[in-house]
Image 1 (cartoon, protein in one colour):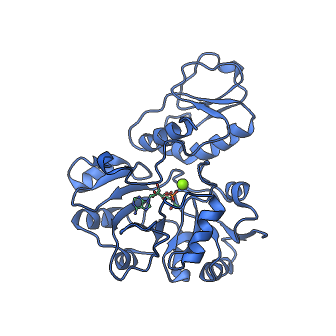
Image 2: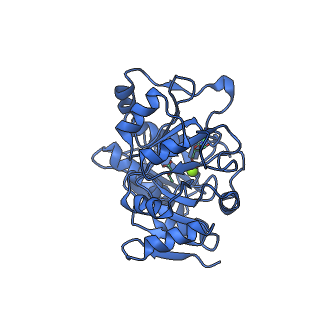
Image 3: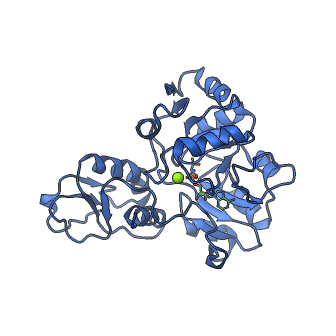
Length: 322
Ligand code: TXA
Ligand code: MG
């Protein structure tokens, strides 16, 4: 299969991409967080192609993307906290896991057989136009091979999936750079399943209470949150105070680890110490440092507040035992 690159600024691109999706093909598209690998959520054979192209385990359910809150409410049952979060953060980098609605059309394979559904209304003009044109929910995991670094540019998508998908809708680099925050609103207590583009503190302001974590006693609530994930080829060493021989350096703010001069390659996520800027650059930086050929990427300390929680989460998974 030859993967087409559709340039989003081309007037025909959205209609072409929507037609491919409606025909059951896979099309990657930009969202404000990362590029998603889209398929018709109502078509099980289209959804199965996502698992094959990504080599993703079948037990890991997908997020359904909708153009607006009204379309989301056809698919899922939003309780009071979910409604408040949706109103405050949609469109935006928030995913809500809620009980599926009886009239919902997101197919079983996409939900991995669960009676809940993950819903997201992305804030990206290209994603919105595509969802409007597709006229159905579109499931989209990040458009990378399973376990690899998420794509924040069309070239990253092609690095992983060229020849495996019908097209990539190229809308330039994504703005947020880390995936959506996932909150489960199922049993009356909202739970944070994955830190992401909406910081925890912003959610807690809207909810008026601290956000609970996922319920370990019920097993992994977001089945995709495996320890090792977002992994470059190189090993990743966190909170590095010094750079060792043969390492590449990933820095933040004014930090100057000892031995920096011997780094094989050096990138600073945000010299001015801005966590939003660092999040936007994170996955691209991991890809570039990986390409330097270094055996290990040493990462300087990054604070854990605001978008730092999502950054540290992704780096911890990149550093996990494989
Ligand atoms: O920003 C994002 O969320 C991107 C863009 C493309 O929208 N998408 C994304 O999808 O990150 P993915 O598939 O890489 O991550 C989805 C996560 C997985 O960890 C999955 O287990 C979890 O959402 N998830 C999906 N449905 C779920 C459900 N019903 N219950 C619990 N977790 C669910
Ligand atoms: Mg992913």
